[in-house]
Length: 254
Image (cartoon, rainbow, N blue to C red; front, side):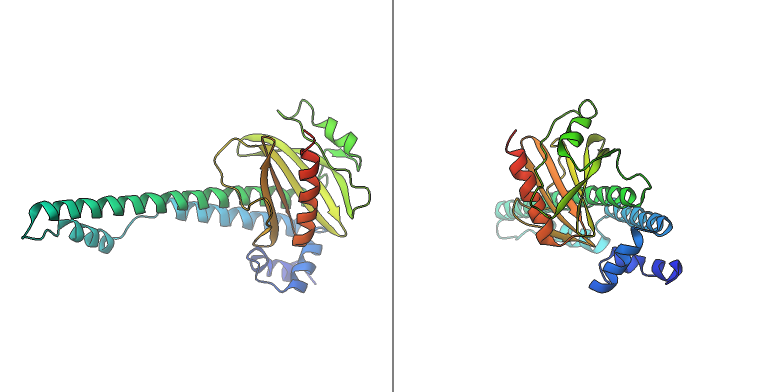
């Protein structure tokens, strides 16, 4: 299949609309084709810019404003004080609902931007000729490499007896903070593990026990010991959950 045919499927791939077989085939192609990987990354960034712009330009329309003004202006003649109190209560309720809606919308936008940033890093790293800066399957080699490069320390799990392999790591910059980006492999799938400072207000994707499907990736996200962990990849949800459990057990040593 020529690259043009793969590229024609990229938008459906990024929106999670391909069949499972087609998704796996395109995943395999992206791991071997830098041109298609770069195209996929560019499309992810374009989608992020559109979502950010759309989120910042929302404004209530004239019909909605007129409806609110009409409800505030209505005052029963038989009791002016009651009417004023009712209008004030209605306004307060509307303002509260608007504040809650704005807060939830802002949280969703921040979460989406954070997710897209991680997706960019994951895709770009796997498409790079040198995806990791420290190449080793030994946790005792990878962990010390980060000392002095990031402002915290962490523990990595022992993988003996599991299906996971540690490929190495690199320093990642997410939301203006530096953290660890580790690459694990299970069968033919690569999984990114991001370990970051807790600082910031970006909401978690999931609770401690769930894996969430976001477009073409499975994600598990939690905080532990003052750090935020995000396990991210196209591996099966149960594999993401197993690796997360190993990381949680290792972090409990701190």
